Length: 474
Ligand SMILES: Cc1cc2nc3c(=O)[nH]c(=O)nc-3n(C[C@H](O)[C@H](O)[C@H](O)COP(=O)(O)O)c2cc1C
Image 1 (cartoon, protein in one colour):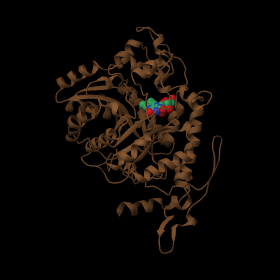
Image 2 (cartoon, protein in one colour):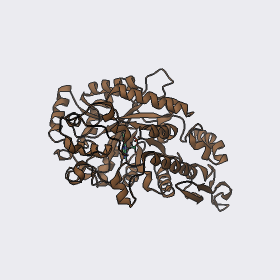
Image 3 (spheres, rainbow, N blue to C red):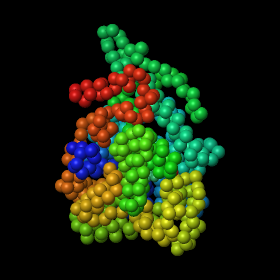
Image 4 (cartoon, rainbow, N blue to C red):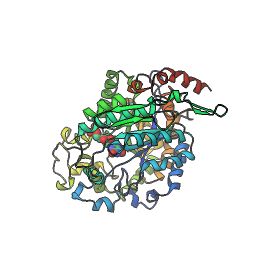
């Protein structure tokens, strides 16, 4: 079982559930469906049940989005955001993970944290602690934020310029690398009761950092976890975002409604990764997708028709307005929306540059309240379409949104997963090891060709692979 494209066997599909610690996430309005349980998002059992469901379906991970701030661009306020619960309320995603890890063994957790409002030290400590507790199942979705409302909440003057946010992200990451990989040698912890040496002092080193945004000096407080650096995910697709992502990220989350556009992005990502000295396949590329499935094509269509009655395309537009930083309520339904340079998600906003789009077009796209591509059909139909999209574009897998929760995940596991497995395109059991090892089959730690290498303490860098091998063969 491998996802390596160096073999001739077709790649197996990687799969994350895409969710958020909130009621409305992507497909807005479906919280009103009688069978939807997303209003229970503040109950731990809602999440522990979900984690167990996903593990039954052999999902690689649960990818948890997060936002700092509120969606107040549409109609210049938050009334609709509150009424439709468009990611408001939304709670801290990190708080969910220990509980879900306690009831699962293999499921990975990709947690979104906006670095703009974090101290690198506190953040690195929290994630290293979680990597210990989950035995190496943690990933970090690196975001820098795009909402003015967040800046006001945090007490800053206004959103930093788009490219400056990435410069800050570079330095934040560099300092995290120093904490995670440069302070403690692999064999620093001895736990030797007889000699009364828990940690060998000669193997713990001071981190020194004097940068443009951050300063730090001292030892990291957390001993090395299985992965040290969590699996790094990123979702920016602007030119600056791509340079950052192809240098650092191991998982890239891209939007994309047309296969040609997705393929173009995939080729660009792989070329840029290679130009940065990394293996083109060192970056796993995920596309966000929505699926409605049932026993037959006809029943799936009926289910979609039923869901549509509860969905809110307008709430979808309110979400979209904040993503692009432009109040879409100001345009008539059939008017072409002009491109305006904004400080928000450049890759989403570019849509208006590339195509002539009206609000009617957007509403049709948001038929289920969300902008992600929608696939409808029996398990076999959906499986064929997912495989086709993967083979046509060169992506590695999908971030699957929820529709009616948790029904849509149960449906996907019941109808689609067996069809993918029958076609040899989905695992039938988990690999052993950390999230990183499950994704790449190359051990728990980042490879020596990753930029992290220059921040590793000397003996850590030289012994990491041999320690890794011992660990895996143990
Ligand atoms: C598919 C996708 C998912 C994203 N998910 C989040 C998220 O959960 N939280 C967040 O703050 N930003 C999210 N973003 C925003 C990006 O992380 C990034 O900050 C933003 O796209 C700006 O970068 P860009 O202009 O390079 O695209 C997402 C972006 C995309 C394209």
